[in-house]
Amino acid sequence: MGLSSFKRALWVFHIATGSCNGCDIEIVAALTPRYDVERFGIKLVGTPRHADVLLVTGPVTRPMAERLKRVYDQTPEPKAVVVVGGCGSTSGVFYDSYNVVGPVDKIVPVAAYVPGCPPRPEAIIHGVVTAVAKLEQLAGEKR
Amino acid sequence: MTSLHLVWQAAAVLVGGGLLGLVYKGFDRKLAARMQARIGPPLRQPFLDVGKLLVKESVVPRDAVGWLFKAMPFLAVIASFTVLLYLPWGPFPAILRTGGDAILVLYLLAVPAVAMALGGFASGSPLATVGAQREIVMLMSYEFPLAVAVVGVVWRLATLGGGPAFSLGAIAAAPLWTMVGPLGVIGLAILAACLLVVTPAELSKIPFDIPEAETEIAGGLMVEYSGTYLALFYLADAAKTIAMAALVVTLFAPYGIAGLLGLSGAGAQAVDLVFHLLKIFVVMFAAVTTVRVAMARLKIDQVARGFWLQITAVAVAGLMLLVLDRMVVG
Image (cartoon, rainbow over all chains, first blue to last red; front, top):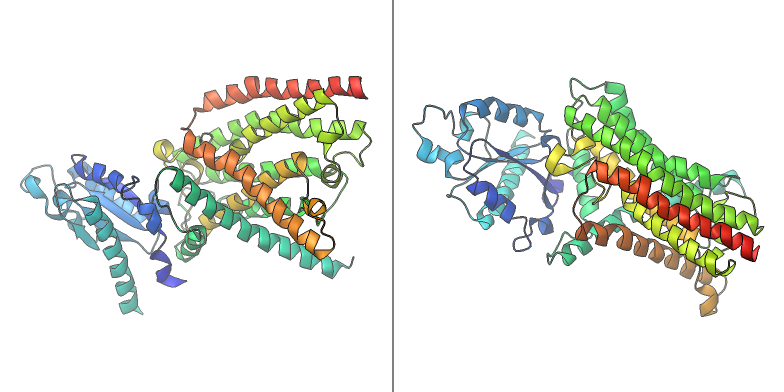
């Protein structure tokens, strides 16, 4: 067992922090028969308690910052955050908005960024897999 | 039979049942994926999931009633695995046998649902509370048709003088289909159909996954469970799937094929055991996998009304046919 268990059994929780729904639709597209992430053991779950990876979309609006932090804390260890989309990675077009406190890495530690507006499902899958590799690397350094 | 022998047999059934439950879960997911034109996860995916859950942190929420929250997953696992000990396995009789084991199995099958509901109430989350209330409503709805189906079979067998009443061993030893008249056959078919409808409800699978409803109440009962506790519920679900399908097979299709093939001895036992597992798989595929792919989730009021009125009416009609059969055939 150990962290290699995560390679092929990864449960993902999706949290939207004020996104336009573009990235969210692409995440759902990754579940459809065309991309079928379940064949890699990746499953979208309904609660952060079951999750290994948090998929965060959106530029993090002021009210969502606290919630994002809370969802991150609710996720059991070991965990990784993947930012999906340009907004979450860099604040994107909302960089000087009065109501945006992002990007995501200001609020919670991020393992992988998936830029794009919106990114393609392949890119999202790649991002999730990269996050797992990073998770293993970090755990290796700690030991 | 020595007690050591009994322990070995029990261990074999428990370990075998657990592994089989996970393998069947793998088949269920793979076949569901194929029906949706997906490739689907590998067959060993449930093992990988459980392995991963065991490495994860097991969080006990601050608002939870700690001991109840922690105890319920164990209760669910113990109850669902105990059912496996009371069920006959094809040519092999049940490990534990008492006079009324059909009744005992009915109650043991209800225990995991109650454990999940209590765990949900104890987890201190409003979503889990909603899920727990729904689980209890579901339990009260499907329990009556389930009881009617079992009692119908048991009663008809008792009137034909087949062994001690409510003994699963006696039911498995004497398939009713050839012992009753035409009315009885129709009645039995109706009861079997009712039991197949109850099966996904008992297992909380689509269209009856209302207590868990990921998309509306975020996993419902399971919302606060993580790590080892979630893995235990996962195992309990796998074992319960096997137990429920095995109960259907034992009640309505306890046939072996070794006699037809002209086998005897250990070979016959092996063939019959494999055939029994195959029948369990067919029941699971028909009542769980295809149904969950073909349907969407029902609402709780639809399920409660459907089970209390329509399904109960159909089940009672089946029972009445068995009664008529008793009057005609004797």
